[in-house]
Image 1 (cartoon, one colour):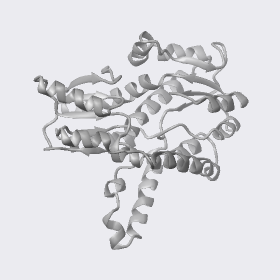
Image 2 (cartoon, rainbow, N blue to C red):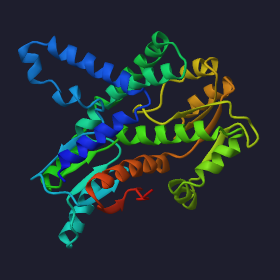
Image 3 (cartoon, helix red, strand yellow):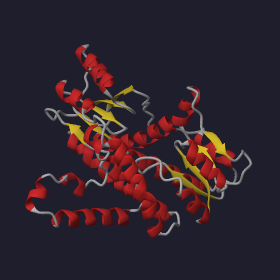
Image 4 (cartoon, one colour):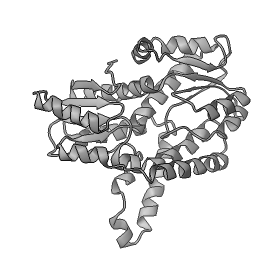
Length: 318
């Protein structure tokens, strides 16, 4: 198995469970192809060709090195230069390591990840918000994130991987799509009545069991144990937190409970204003769930792999 094989599977499976639906993902890729075809020859030279087949800018191979066979993988939620150096230390001490996988984007995957936020307009559309409204809600948020990313020194970590010759890739939205899809399907099937029913379900999953042991248990942020759920929206993908203006529209669309990873204080106040229940499943634990579901598929196709768990990642197989 080569690093390209991993990337191809990650993208394929990310599309398979994309909360927008495969039809809207295909429409997105079709639009990109048309934009590319309309460019001049000079403009095409700097175009991100991979984006014509990979809709997730934040899930990329950042350094492939000598393209080794992959059997031993270091995985972390956040990989920065200290984690790269830790991996080099492990290799120098005799540990076999072929690849580093980061969940949160770095390098080019971070520089361009604001483009991923556009998928939120289609996610909101699937929740019952008119597409013309959801697009106008999301566009300012994309610009806000784009401006915050632009001045950053984004190549520090990928440079470290290159200098130390350690293959390095990121798996962000491809994993987040999995946790969002998994939990949404489970809740749709379970049809929980009260918020405590959602908490009880989460507390049976190994990722959330572990997070509870380290002091980060799922919590009811707005509402109480006996609050009735109503329509449940699992909001765990799309690059980053969406615009606070979306809570009013979600409430009008009939959403009664949002299950998310995390929420800013401004967003909490807005959700409270519109009487929406909020459960925080947990950030790192939910990231772990998405990655583990993705790695389960990887191992099903290519056989068992050896994982080195660092930076908050814990491997749980299903």
